[in-house]
Image 1: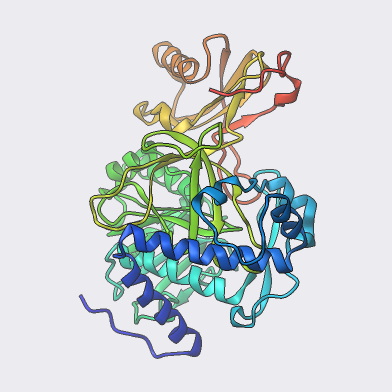
Image 2 (image 1 turned 90 degrees about the vertical axis):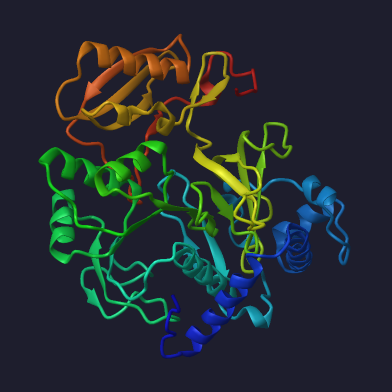
Length: 454
């Protein structure tokens, strides 16, 4: 289907040009894509060395000399940038002189839902490129732009103004059908009523709200509107949510992975459930505990470098997530694959020895228990876990025992597991759901001298 082009605006013409370039680059060879990445890295590193005080010192200490070529070997020798560096260094991480072709700069701040909010500076050119990646996501899903879009978003979000009707989707490039929006602080019954009233063809919504929405329709025996596609992102998309979406809406979810400070990082493949790293925009590494690249099927720490982040260069930035590296995709696109984004690096229980074990709620398959609506695992002490549950009705003893068994298998047999019932589990201030909370600190473990995790 040929998508009609919207009446051009200056920004729309620029966005269309970048989008068309991305349509071509998605079929580059892996070798050409890597050459492009490292050519862009050379420009980014030279710029950071010249205009960013923090990086000037750090790069010199790593042996960087202005004008040198950046090889994969030298790249892996550079130190990692931690979230605490962004907080502690402040303007020392901001460029003192952005190239004129990158336009002006503006400040981006995270919500602080992780407990560690950060701020960076983004250029107009980088934002243009990130907007093109968002548009690529729609193109990859082959949505019919002539139809109606419904978006459950935070008031004032850039996608569209919240709480009303709009003549188009706001792509600035293609002609589209109408859009309707609803504030994501609305209650689940309000969202369900809005969906049934507006009958959108496509839906954009956060994972936590979508999960609650599926249970709302199931519990009341209501048929949802005949939605043709659902976009989900901003949080980890687990197998449980994918299964619920199939069960209630009869749809496979379209997911994405990103972060406020880095923008969209990876998009779900149009043909498979795994993610393609947006390698024209971000260099992504998945590293094991020794800092080496993970092989396909191995989980590790996600490290990103936004290639056009000339306002506040984030060079080898540990974004705070864990992911499973994937094998090359049979779809033919050269982008590196993330098999699954499994959670945050802080989602780890701490054993008395000081050893950490990552605990990802999506792998527990609690969706198999039809009475469990929501759960959150809380490490209370080095010996005790609490599982907070929102349920339709109290669980049977067999189900309670199975829940505890799965928790212990995923963490450690030495834990005592207490199940507690709650009317609801609140979202973070940033509107996200945390399925794991640790109330003890690694440094307080009796055997914290053991610096390892398994």
